Length: 261
Image (cartoon, rainbow, N blue to C red; front, side, top):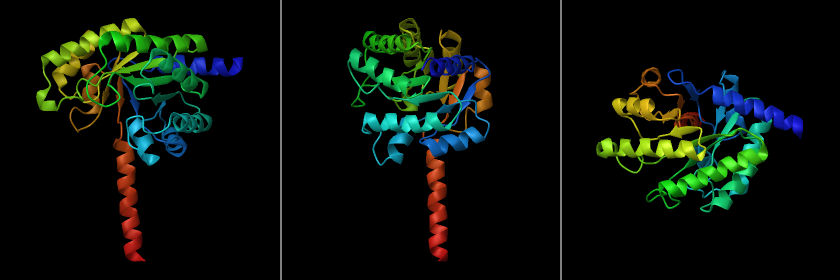
């Protein structure tokens, strides 16, 4: 057990070091052991799941509809088949209470993950946890990591920009993102994830002012990965995009096969 912990500890430290402002870690999000093994074979530095893709691949909706035991089983299969650091999207932590979050994160670590995404969106998708509430939840995740003896990378996701369409994004939202970043850092977070933010100037301002390395999810051709690096982003992820592309290819393949049969 101690040897396993050392191995996980080394992977966790390595994963932290991959987050470099201006030279971002690029993560092609996976959904199961097969996709994780495929992405590892491409020369990836780490493996990251996406909750939407994992849920959909299991026939469920995103939003913690997939039973947590299935989340753990899927994670276990991934960590057993790849040699890279693995980070898992656990949505809101599968629990509203601090104790639930802590226990769930302990189980995530036991199943081999060295990083997590945990969001501040409320379970019903309407609104966010207050900053004090979310800080308690992040602190609970950090306590779990310390109890397990693993320097877990806690990627604190804020859904500020997903709660509003891009046309309604403004300086006030950016200001709140910066405020949350500072509070989340004090609570034990390792990174800040801002899905939905696409405005180049605001991405740069956030990277300049956030005490945490910033993770941006690519949802459109602009800004490109190269441009995001120049803006100071430290981590780039692709969310459900890889899964959608694979399924679209599979659909086309199926149509061509069936039409030709």
